[in-house]
Length: 398
Picture (cartoon, rainbow, N blue to C red):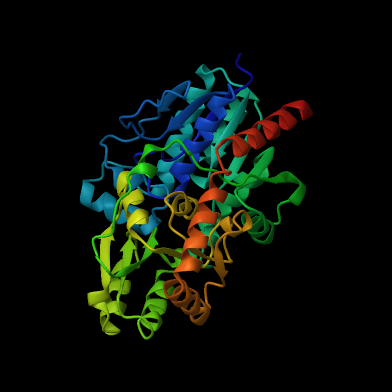
């Protein structure tokens, strides 16, 4: 029996996703479906997917021509404008115009759909959620996966920050993906703490890719992995500086940077300046099974994020039996005990942790086994049930 009907708005959905937002949306909708929640998901672009656990997926189709890179969740306004110039102006005049066009499409779609509550993910969909609320008088929940201050390393785009703040304030309830994010929301936007619920993420433990069992191609060399967007938020510059220090103690190591972003060329140049280019592999952006293979070939996953609202990839690493060293400035550090945790700026301590893990296999193996056992308790059921509880509380108040 269907308990609730949810009108969910998101900017990306696997396999077309740039970061954790799409993966989180996928996991949440799958978890909700297992609890008999009817989810209609509205995306801005048409993609070739039809997840069996969704009641319906609707494409707003706001583009005249499909170019995936211009509607990524974490694209900057400047990157958008550069892409428009290369594509022959098939998009709106800027990223904000695309967000508005999506909102207008959602307004029309909402008139035709039957649902009980609206659930909008991150600032790109907040206006769409508000329009849907205006048309239907249904309650609006906005989900924040990262603040603009998080994404930009403390140098926010003023327009985005204002839209984000506005969306948080017009919502009936706010869901944050960690206590770390909740505190950032309170600090940046002075949102009432009582209005914000924390829902930590879980993993789709049934994902077949966890069983690939990929082996490292580097023979006797150990591998330290950075996987994520190569942007200031993720701390790739700290990864490079740590690599240089680690190589002062241990020589047989490869450092793999799996990802892309606006800092990539700068990172490559810095590696070259330090004279350690032969110790680095730059893979570019990875998707699907390639991500799991990267984890499985690595001995340690290092996440030196300057500001990490959650860090779902850390859970994926543990599920692939790869031990993790994570920034204390992360949401995932709140839910995992079997991990090494360090301040993102503490290069010396990160170096010590890596060297100790490499020199003491028993420590590395203990982190691997205990981390794997712990992450197997973090499934999709708990976050899904927390969201359902929030839905019911909001509906009861109305």
